[in-house]
Length: 341
Image 1 (cartoon, one colour):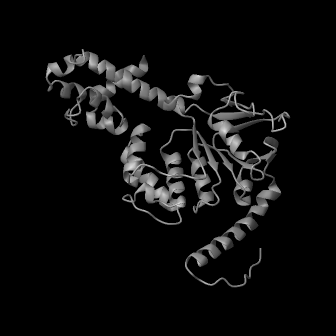
Image 2 (cartoon, rainbow, N blue to C red):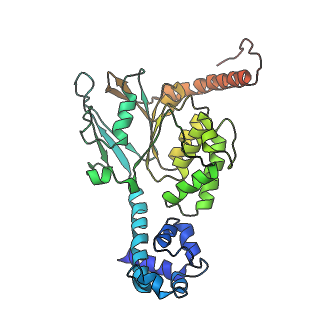
């Protein structure tokens, strides 16, 4: 296979340190064979020449067979990366509402699109996000079906944890691991097979601080982050580190972050974004909005030119409200407003 030939060239020409930099999880491959002490400044073949034959014989391997195992391992990593990049669109095929009535809708969303989901509290917005997250195949209470690139998915494709297509950011995000921000991002970079991990980690950190209303450091424990800081960190993570092409967001308006910048960040990184919201600014900034009623998709609306025009006034009001929030946070008085839309 041409891919394996390319990987053999990488293994032949690159040092172990260079390989690990682009494929961090390769370090676990060597640890699995008790080879964590290989000299990282050497190529694989050079480093293996310096170890005792008995170390490989313990696993029933020699230099050649171990190298072939590494080729297979790296080929799997490359395949996962390529598979993740293939998603171009997602389609929702309607099921039924709480009364059992057919939704009679089909909606296809392409990479770079933003879809808002609106409706009263308890109407079923989170249920729609749940159907998308599990890539439902007519097997949830709503009987909806989710297609990827116009095709249904097998159970193997739906539940492949190594190639997760959907990332969800929920309203309540609580970290349970006692890591600092740097350690958390490093762990994610490794598990997501990020090339140039150090650069991506720094990019996520800077981005998260731009989104958050209150700054934090790399040494801050993730368990000590506020709700807004946590959401900002996970949005930056989803944009720059996660390969999941579909991002679901539940109620971002109360997160204490620059929500419009957050959505722009995700779409710039070729994500399909669906956001459940009560915020007029977010709802009207989307390309389309799904209206939920009685647990079902009531209608799908494209954002009109008039609504786009009205966003200018809504943004002015939003800026005023943000200013008032800042005044209250800093213990200042709020006086009668004087403004013209």
